Image (cartoon, rainbow, N blue to C red):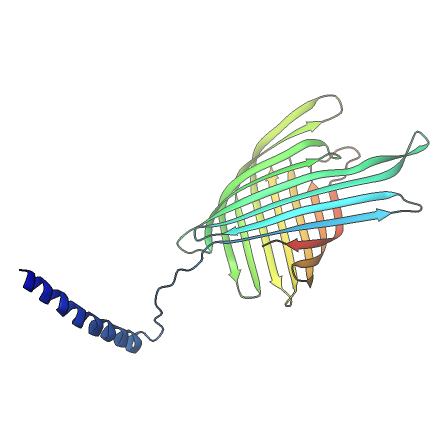
Length: 267
């Protein structure tokens, strides 16, 4: 029995290398593009922060600060995006005939979208949430959640186009100086994003979104161009439009913002 086992092991040691060699020859003949299995890293995380500061002196005394954070998390099954921006402005204003320094703009805005990739990774199901707290608006805060269909319609080397659309629910707290009131209802959310690599260090991004409800429609457009200065540091020029059909009184429905900021990419 032991001799039979030993003979079998010796036979395997002799035959196995020959069989492996023949399989390699067959693969090289019939599968010219065959490559041995290699573990592919299917998780990518990028994050960048931006900071812009404007100091005005002379006839107008003002200080404006804008900060932001963007992160993308790409895995085999998920494509996730996170966005945070803060705006603060302090200016000298006239109050009862006297000049004094006061806060004239203060806003916190954040959103996140989670895309689950289907069999075709360009076809996805999304879940979206956002929160907006603008001190100088008719609302204490506004928030929304939505879910639906998302797709990467174009996916080329230098540019990409993606969109999403689906139903959701919006809620907000309004104030008129005396009492707060809740406002909520069903909405339809749609978004469109286009990115293009203009050169080795320059990028163009156009983003449009809207949340349409029975009584209020909110829309946002952001156009930005960034150019790399050196290493992970870049300069970014942005133009943002925020529209809210529910604005009343002295508050305008359309709010615009132009900024120049330094952007640093961490990963």
